[in-house]
Image (cartoon, rainbow, N blue to C red; front, side, top):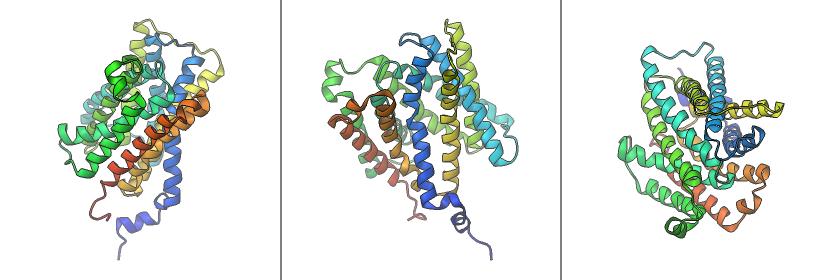
Length: 322
């Protein structure tokens, strides 16, 4: 008598909840460190807030490295070279434009004009925008009361960190180049999440992500110099920072994929609330933004966003999982 897939998974160390929790926290630490790592990179590479071309080059270099790492890690796990199917190249090209080129063009722009704390909290809105895209644009799923309430709670946290209704009507606290660009990045994140769901039906998602990171990085590295940008390595810290930023995407994505393989989706996705928490804590630690991070507004906004992520993802349990 053979064991069921669930029984087999229970024998895998990645399905043991303490390991799942520790690995998920590690992934969220990596993702949460993205904002401070990028802002530190601007200082190391001496890229000013208005030097868009050089920021594009920095993003390109990061994702070129991330693509190589993801393909390497995925190939090691698969015990064979990961090569896309011939029919997958078109989808990879689309993903590279939507996710790597467009999303991170705005993401890198935003972090040059807003704090790491605000950026980390606002960036979490991608979780809720993705729900709206999946329900009303791509028609993957239906809106439920729990998802709706989760989105409301999460967006309330985003609105609070932006300064509330007053900031939207009177301006001042919100800028298009900062908070506006981060929201634009979140829209592209939501779209790319839905596209990955579609494209991964016929292709390994690690292959999709690895090659779209690589191609998107190449595109950004071509655009940057054409716009007059440059990337000068002033010290070994520049190299270390750039390699680490590449590992953020490659390492976290690969490990998160392993967790999804051996655990119910709901068990893993609900732990995503740790992501903005880590972003805020690490921004406070490495960027000296503790005053904003631990203010009543910052803490309450983070609580609302994290609660929204938990509410939304807890609604995804299937009948089998229940």
